[in-house]
Amino acid sequence: MGETRLEAYARLLVEYCLDVQPGWQVLIRTQPESRPLLEEVVRRIGRRGAYAVVRLGFTLWPIDVAWASEAPAELLGTLPEIDRFASDEMDARITIDAPENTRGLVELDPERRALAATATAYFMRRTMAHEIPWVSCQYPTNALAQDAGLTRRQFEQLMYDAVLVDWTDLKATMRRYADRLDAAEELRIVAAGTDLTLSLAGRPGDIDGGESNMPGGEFFYAPVEDSAEGVVEFSEFPSVSEGLEVTGVRLVFEGGQVVDASAASGEEYLFSNLDTDEGARRLGELGIGCNPGITRHMRNTLFDEKMAGTVHLALGASYTHIGGTNASGLHWDLVKDLRSGGELWCDGELVQQNGEWKL
Image (tube, rainbow, N blue to C red; front, side, top):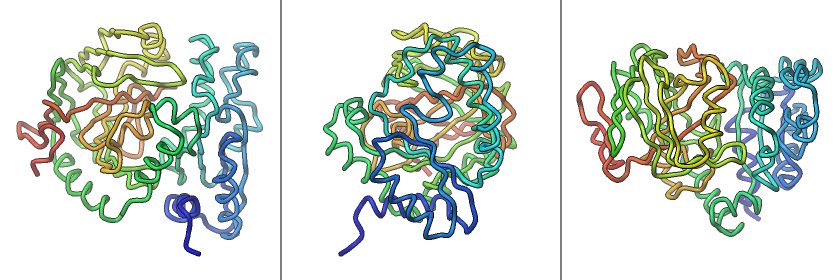
């Protein structure tokens, strides 16, 4: 019998994304519904002579909503020593998101969510700096399918279309596009309601060819922290984060900082994110989506930010391995569709129009 899609998916995670080595301690954070994929991943880690350290919860470790809803603030904002030790000592990390309810964090008020984000930032710091190999992925659940407006079977098919691609070929294509942006001093994003410029000077991009996210299919930058100028409207798609939906986000930047913001809905959540900390009003990432297997918005950032013909901007923490210096407990990706009337300009040269590259 040939390899099943599930087996191929697990092999990608263990062998391609992480290249697990003997003796490694691979921390896996996930939820109960991922069991079929989790067990296959654990088997493959074992075959490689490494440890599979599973952290299972109803929300993704290290956040437990039931505890976070009751714990005193002085505890909520920090990780316990045992979890800090795990964060410090893990050799690789896999996150398999398999929610039974994508609204799991809604019951936490904004202040508690901000404190939990501060604690989680400690766990994420080594992966944000790419000190260790890591990968985030999903397992098809009814909750994810419902958010996407699909049946579970349809969601599963779309997921495999996005992850079981020719990563060698896609990486080569993205490298060609990234080389042009690497040479740019300034990038300009133009679309209806949007005219935003930012500097990439001295900041080389990185390519996500599926090693850190599965699906991958983007290349991304850490914009110069004080460079963003202008306005951007995220009018095409809602942003769904922590189970909360925000639509019609509009951000105005001056000197790299958000100085005005509004939303058609979910404005309270928008402002609670902007007020997370000092770094939350600056851009931590510019990403360019290139995955041809993702053709529709799914209310799922892991997929939506990779859609070919889109860009995404993340407020908050930047990736230090590509020169970013912005620190924050927030990293919130907002996706902008450029496939109808959008343009990307590099130092005055039109490089993408209506989602189609001109290079």
